Image (tube, rainbow, N blue to C red; front, side):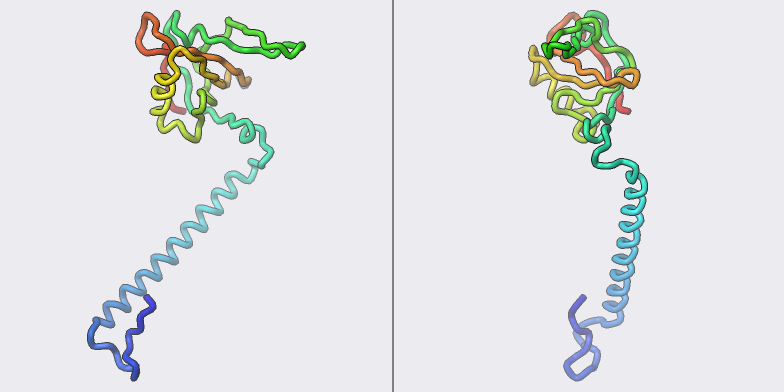
Length: 169
């Protein structure tokens, strides 16, 4: 793009096709301009779309984006027996075993997996397999309320280690 198309005395160089090179250079300039316009438009759209989301927004601060929904729960599975830990007024952790997963629960965070790194839910089986018989902290959204559950993947009478089916949101 920077090489001169003329000789030192101002004539077109004879070792290259000057017309073809000028055509290609013009095409490259047009493509760069088009690219810049598209990127500016994308940037403006993103800015407009997320203008209402501030840095202090609770949904972003808590990373409360639902990335999957519970669509099937097997009875007597680890998922149906998951426990919820509740902080009492004396700041002691009390376990409530009646919660468990329910249909249409939204998964916000599953161990270290959230909306930014779930990889089409392909990361979940790997995490579950690595955490067999170890509790996994799961943050869910149920009826506009955020709950923290503890799920322990383990062998049971059904398929898999957790006993529920998730679908991407």
